Image (cartoon, rainbow, N blue to C red; front, side, top):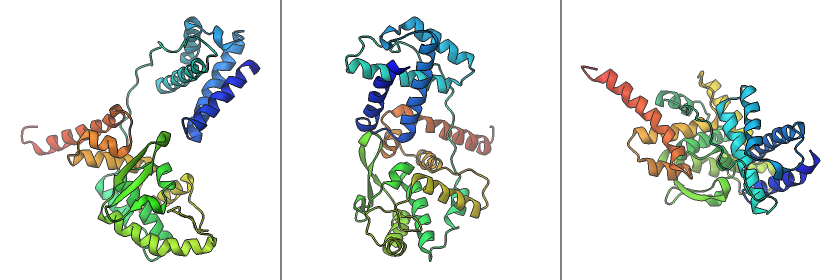
Length: 300
């Protein structure tokens, strides 16, 4: 496997530096590459340039025999296709054996979201006289008001907030930037936290920072920290749902579409590169419309 390590290392550096991939994304790519390299070693294939369509089919057959989900197989194919595309760019190989391999069709899971009643319970659990309570409420309001990712929330700086016109400047995946509006509820809670709770938290650290959301010691919150905060809020609200930050993003998109927002607008607000990523939420709204119809139409 040593012959494969140098190109693999270069590819990981490319993902981290040029593509600005998250640590999770890099980890998945590395796992897929390692799986592929082990297969090549077992088959006695001593060079990446010796991989052809026949070898690829043999590799995929092995994946299916492992009873991996179609989603996992699709991700592995995409990872290796990107890896070979990189090798082509670096002129280490001439052809990409994964280029014409079709991805297995997979069922699109309908994203989970929160109903208005569940959200109301969450909005009532924080102590707004306490610095941490103000922070927690601000995180909840911002995530629901804007639909931003937890990584984007973690990276918010004071300079990214414009209270005058009610917008956040967000740096998304792949260094893509966008402006996202937020409403009066988020504005009020965020302003209170920044002027009061955040100032108290920052005093504990003793060093100024531009990061908006801070932990109890005054240091910038991590993604894991935000997840823990939301789960504790769910416990206090006595809800039975598992609330990961992405569920608030799903809720934002679903509620926007249910209230009549067009798909292109929601796509832009979410920072999706492709409309197909946003279209999954139309399945939720179709179910909603069907339920309303069945419960409301006299002859349904």
